[in-house]
Length: 529
Figure 1 (cartoon, rainbow, N blue to C red):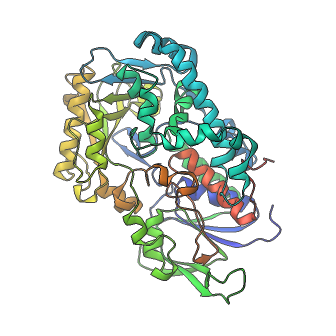
Figure 2 (figure 1 turned 90 degrees about the horizontal axis):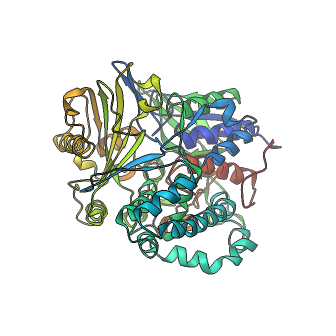
Figure 3 (figure 1 turned 30 degrees about the vertical axis):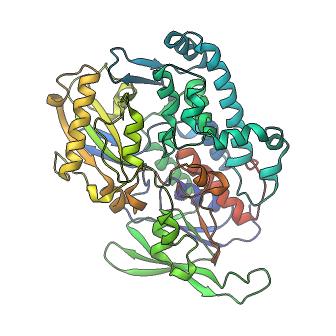
């Protein structure tokens, strides 16, 4: 526990905001959290209609040890808070023009057999690939994820120096080339390359370092929280409140308040420090919350460019003009009558020419890919609570350009025409490739979301679904930092900043903020109680 309690305001009640608030309150600080929406959760939201309940964001539970460590910091455990189910298969993959789908198992041995069956000799290459992925993953966790890069130890640790040549090679090579040099079968290449999308990039744009992701799904397995991913923000909110956090929903932060600071040798470049946050509730009433520290856990672009004047912005608009957004997305939530055994809990649909697919999303000018590689989640395969008995819950995610002008979604086809057309094409593709010819006829609940919704609901930069892409110049210490260089006492958390995109990264970002507040420059996870 800290020796000096401070007043802290956290902006944003997503996973990173809730996690930051809980950790800081547990450390003895007085914490208020403001969230513009009616309930916390951010991207990890939930929507219910006619007996169907849909998660509206994250759906893959990977890196379980990160969750375990986070809960241990709060004196509890994952097992005490959430019932996790291990999925089998981990996921199913459908390939354009290939009759048979492929089931990726939840353990390393069976996946080795799978690779060997797809390409003779690939089993041995699989062993080497996963060994390298595991090594890179361990180094990342111990040296690159749980650090603010404010100490030479992050760059010059014994293990980093011993593996320097390998690390440089993995950072300068592209993931797709790294995979292609080891495997010939296109199905294997796509299975190994697709995790780049989880990072807001593509296999030909992400550094080969991110082959570490394959250790997670091919060896460590995929899990699912019973009751849905909404369980995570529910648990985080409960733990935050138990530790004394005051949560203000329906309350938008509008301005980060500052006061002048007299220049000193140490702070000569920081002429101001935070003094509070101005908020506006749903009725328009404004209120100023005093603060010694402010944690911006909402979209970083929104915080910097709308809550601070230009001279106080560490990341002004010209910085974002040079940055690379992750993809946008059309999300489609479907309630379907009857069972759909053709689909696993997770199913991936890969087009044969997915280089062109990714170029449509990331190159200029952008366009909506057609056909589009896409992802389908069928949580009702594992969870009886998300659909009426005998029916199915489907969540479709179609990566598209991050472009708010494409519009927003709606219920029962009421979204923008282009968004509904993308949804229709996705439903047709799933029905065709998975041999479910009557899929469209069995839909009884339908809702879509588009880039416009990500802007309206989450203030998302460029309407992106995930955050800034994990390209080389937006990874590790090159990613937007989590402390303001212009305003003392202002820190950042969430997918926009270090360490990056995903639920585990958001939990780690909260721990990095705790380190900042403590003045802790250690490398690696904090010791638990």
